[in-house]
Image (cartoon, rainbow, N blue to C red; front, top):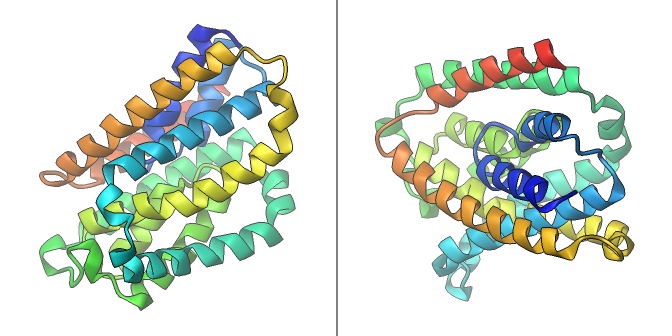
Length: 254
């Protein structure tokens, strides 16, 4: 993998990781067109750029990462537990169902769900408009919603946001809770993958890794800020339509 490929993949990771459109499908398409094989080195690189995306969230929400927010983080960790337990138990099953067709169909299904949920959702009537207002029950609901992201192509961000909205949380609060929930989730995933692939860093092009790290961080930082601004005026319907179109294209070309 050269620097150009590292930059493109870093941009895609940073842009798609926190949007409800699943980074998996985009990585598949990008890798195919760039001629990047899913080697152990590429897997190691993906760990690096995922970690940089986490740092972007931590920088943007640094005021939330303080001891005074212990109640909020207790709810976040509670929401993390279902995925931690069920994900560990089903990790082999997830590998078995991973294929392009599954990813594409989950894009389409997820898109339809977003459009339907938005049709019935009234943000003004949501009892939890701010992230601090999210209840224990809602956090648990979001946690179990996140388990659906084990199915490739579902989108971790998408499943948590939808679960939040269905449980009475506003769009912005659901999205910000999803951002913060990504910290323990991606820390655990990246840490686990790092332990598996740390030997693959030996002999790899560390310059490409470093460039991709910076690119992913910058793009993730900008994307998160822009999404919050977007949600102040618009809904997730556009993302639902995009998912359906992308899923159909994925089925056609791959």
